[in-house]
Length: 443
Ligand code: NAD
Image (cartoon, rainbow, N blue to C red; front, top):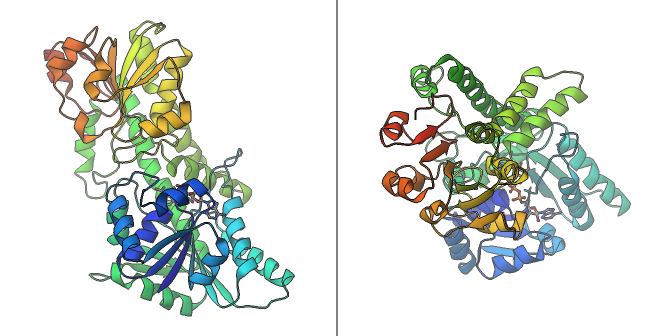
């Protein structure tokens, strides 16, 4: 089948590569010339495990192409996927300018039936606005052409995006037209082989489902972070509590890890956007507000612990930082906890020596060259002449480090662990002052 995808970011590229991988003819459209240039050269503009190889092989097979020309995009695919960004506006609402720009573009070039499939995360009612924008442009052109709009929110996780797309837990299709459900069902057949994964519903429910999923996951994280702050004050160990509650199948172990707060391009903006939508519709979403407030506070947590340890004076100190991306296996730094920490350290006169397996390029893009930030080639290099080690992203290579080497290289044996990767007793026995989340500090 012929598919066009607007937006060559994390969602658009993974969708394009996976749909091409199963034999579809995919054309990806973006407005960023550098991105398209890179993609045409066979380079992925983002880091996502397995994506580069998949882009290259499908490009070589002629099933995956890239263009800056929206007209080509509209002509190419029966399915017109929208996978552009929906960043937060200042008031927390989702900024729909990119989504509506694509809807307008489709209206400008449409000359036969097309299905507009929205994959971007958008507030309830957006499909109506997409339909209205496309119709408005068609009216201006004096054309009465048929098209459908479908909501097909994406649930992939950065870091495991290819696998999530190829073997999804569910494929949500929100339509008001049974014929489009069947056409999308046919497109998704290769991803729906072993058990029924397609859940069809009306458009508004599909739009809300995406926000509901992300908000519930964010709620679990904020709940555990709240509990970790209580545990610290009570002399309890949040990791023991986590084990204790996760064993209940009604609770489960997933997404109940305490830490330095959630980040990324989705949870923070989606929780705020849903809260905003609720407010616009006359409802004060107190729980969502609290989820975001707890997360905001949790992101300051590591800096508070560091500041307390040095009696409020970190000026002139150097911190080794392990991890920069908002979670492992991605180079994405959007709303990353590392940024809140680094910015607090810099504001207070400290410097950072950081290592991340994938996010140096992104860090440099955001912060440029600065005297108080050194990006190191290895985790070990960050330790040289550093006052303490701070772990903020749980990349697997940080899980079992050489503690003797860390102790020898640091100016003092101090570790702040924002992801509870290590055992307090073990580290105390090795002479470290070890500070983690929701557990007692042993020295
Ligand atoms: P992204 O910022 O990585 O990519 C968006 C791309 O869209 C950019 O390359 C941009 O240049 C392009 N673009 C903007 N306007 C355009 C236009 N008019 N025509 C063509 N291209 C245009 O964004 P992303 O992370 O892929 O997210 C896209 C959407 O999917 C968002 O709504 C997001 O909330 C949602 N989502 C993201 C994830 C994730 O893990 N990143 C998961 C599920 C859903």
